[in-house]
Image (cartoon, rainbow, N blue to C red; front, side, top):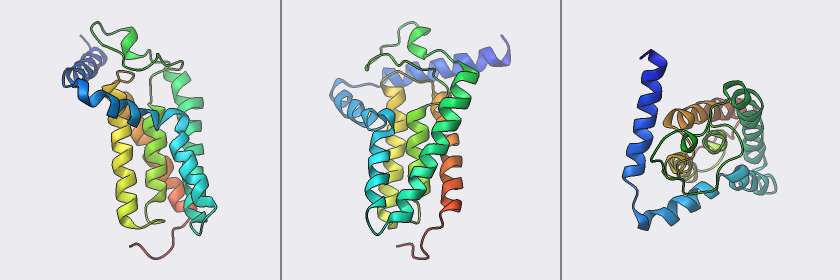
Length: 179
């Protein structure tokens, strides 16, 4: 087995382990959390709402980050890697949401969540930003729980989203206060 085979097996084993800790009472929570990332709707709505308040720069930063992240993830990386979803190839994996129509790598939900949360850092009070970052982590983990991504897909989405968020944060400078 080569290095790629080793990483594929590790990725699959981690995903199956994550599935093994599922509890029926937690499933509605994780399905709700994962739905917040569907099409990035929650993050887009938040960014648009912020654009119509005194937090216009925050909204613009989040929208820029979401756009950059979506371009990199959906236009460049997903077609380039064309990675098949784990539920299509891993025996014993139970899918908890409907089958996805695009490729697996990187996770768009994770990318959008981290792009927006990172871009907003410093534009809003620290406690709000901390809550948004925690939500981004939960959305990313939810993709493993529902069985639509490998851990490396989620990690890739986090990395692209973080880079997009940092770029947008730098492009749209936050106010000097950071409460």
